[in-house]
Length: 474
Image 1 (cartoon, rainbow, N blue to C red):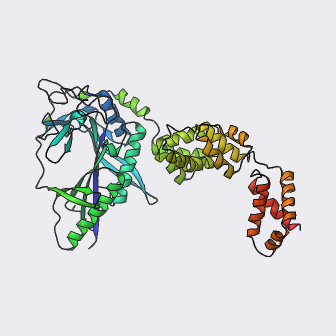
Image 2: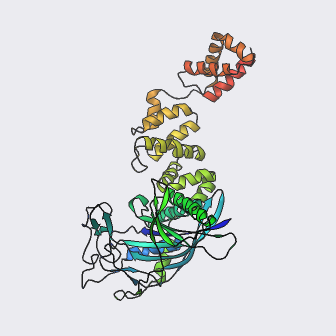
Image 3: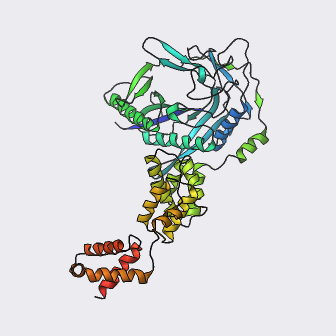
């Protein structure tokens, strides 16, 4: 039987603020347990929450960038439940009045564009973090109260590949905005995925299973692909899908049952009594809108238009925000956009990886890479020589100084090259005969001899053409 796959995703994203959502407690990752917490985070009696304005601003930035309709009246609600990682016994969230509704983001899969709807974005506070050991559970309250936005998609995705593209597009957008550091491995971006199957063409959704806390984009795709197959096999065998929560096991590459769901949980939501509704100033929202900065798709289009790059090259450059910014700096003084892109995407990233460096810590300033590319473009040095120069640039040396010290300046004077070519031809009559008898590899040998005689400084392309020209005369 054929099925339609229905996928929706809920993403919790920690906002990049200095303090927590409703207290002055510091937000931080990797600090000693329970050192970034105060009485409000711990739910001490008599303490009152105060809304973090910067968190609201960052949530608004996300809503605007993702085309959501903004509710300018901010209201909070209480989600009541008891669990050891929730010291207050309730979570402050926005159940009934989300900050934004009905947005979208565009994804690109297999050369096709698709718009994925975003149902809502709401603000809330994070819970504490639990560490389950053999006999005890330890709790670190540092994370309690960290500001979050929850981004709830429409069920518009139909494959693991589309879901992975959706998460990556959101991750990239939020990072460009500066809303979050979106480090999935550190938990600042967490994904819960809902997967269901229905008979092809049916308007009735199937029973969904939720896969919790996926910690990488790769695992999002793998978990969904497995879950689709698992549900299909059950349905094909005449079985019934039960609503359940599952997790992805990286070792077995399968989803594993955590608990079955018998119905919806009644959290007894009610308006948060300690936070009065807040009317946002339209001028403030307009100011945030006007200062969003350049988003990934806009940068891609600009790179293609201004630098004549292919969509593929532009996509590689925008995938890493800092890499794209480095490329822009290179292009302030560089003459060849495509050649510069090749060096940034290929050689630069390779040497950064080899030396365990980042764009921020590289010893190769953008102006130095621009000089290197310009020397290749001007035929001052060959591409092969440039590779040697580049290896030395990691030590912080200027490429022009390296070329001078190494005596690498490329010879492009035709008379000088012709003199060397004729010497080589006179010394290698057999190679001329071999070439004329159809052995094309003889040309490579002759060009190599000229390069050797010139100590690698003869212009390779010019040398090749002139060797052919001189052989034709003999």
